[in-house]
Length: 505
Picture 1 (tube, rainbow, N blue to C red):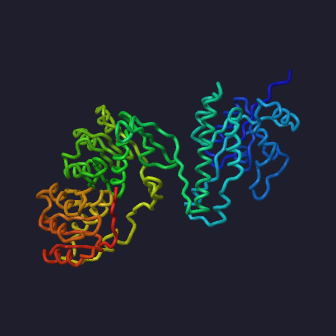
Picture 2 (picture 1 turned 90 degrees about the horizontal axis):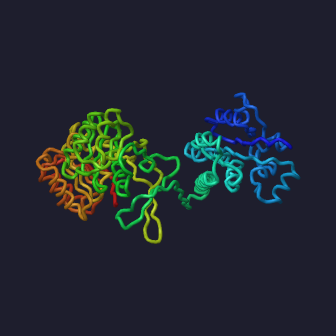
Picture 3 (picture 1 turned 120 degrees about the vertical axis):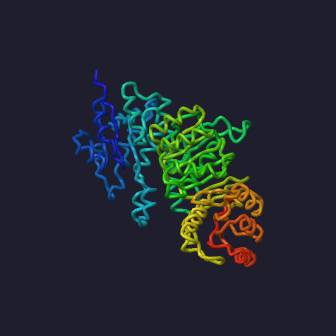
């Protein structure tokens, strides 16, 4: 009886992290290693005994590496359906031994594209051989296991004693096709910027959608951070509405470089503030509207300390989001059984944002705070005296914070903290009145920002009558002269930015 042939594993990886260790483990478990190009060199230099792709095919790689694995002796070994007699006969006639395991990762097309590389470099980072191996292995998942991510290496190692089940191999194939779809979509968008291809994966069912009678699920974008990919450290699973509020809070806190905390209720901030750390920022944010903060969502752009955890735990909070937590802070927060604790990777995907409408999809660039009018140096003083240093700090804070508030948005601030917020109203006058009502007597001497122009002087006059001393707004109304005249008559400082940050959500 002839000996059982060794299992064969093909390595063809751009990112070689963990490849040496994995190859050692596979050899110890009876695998023969086949490797292509630079992967073969890396493994050989590490003392791995292997067979090169060139030795299998009898052909050297050509065209500067564009053609290495595109060969019948490789793809036949991967694609053979061993349940079909004709496939088995072809393998026998060509003396091809099946490849049981394929380990692939692709050229980093999107990373190279983001680096502003030139055209030729981008073209050379379109993976052809790797993509073909990926799809061939996934198609023949019944007989070939496809590993398409470094993150799958631990599962592969854990399965070596028993092998992957058919359902597990099918799941790995699905992940491979998902990667292929995402990869090809990125290339397609580069060739044709007018075409949008969307790719989200790893669906997570939710208990229900916005209301109990609606079904819901979360889909994630590959290789990004953000709320969708946040790690749940404590508490029950997130709901549809939790995700909406958490995203709004995360965005609001992320607008600032200094320690910032945002408190959100129904996707609208009821407190935003800067502080020396998360504890001081939280106390200042909470002071804006303690009533609305009950049952809200809290986001910090800096580590949650024990002190901030103590303060947050005193108010019923649905979700807390931060990039890091002190060990003691987690102990304090985890004592509250109902709070959801999320650890999120800092940074926001600034590519584009989408909204579904009946029969279509609206897509736009994200509203970034990177225009000349987003810095005080780019503002035009049209009324009153130049702002003092403290006023200017508060005005700049207000202008950054106003972007995360729904229109018509008015924010009154003091000491780099919101003390009154008017949002989501159908006219700017009502927003101004709501902001003043929330701020109360604290409005006297404070500053204010408006996310879009004042169409009439009445909204500005509400702020002036409350004692607001300096205001920043975009300008651009047909009645700017009327609005400016009202500020001049009251000797109130008024700046125009020339840029608006209107959020129609």
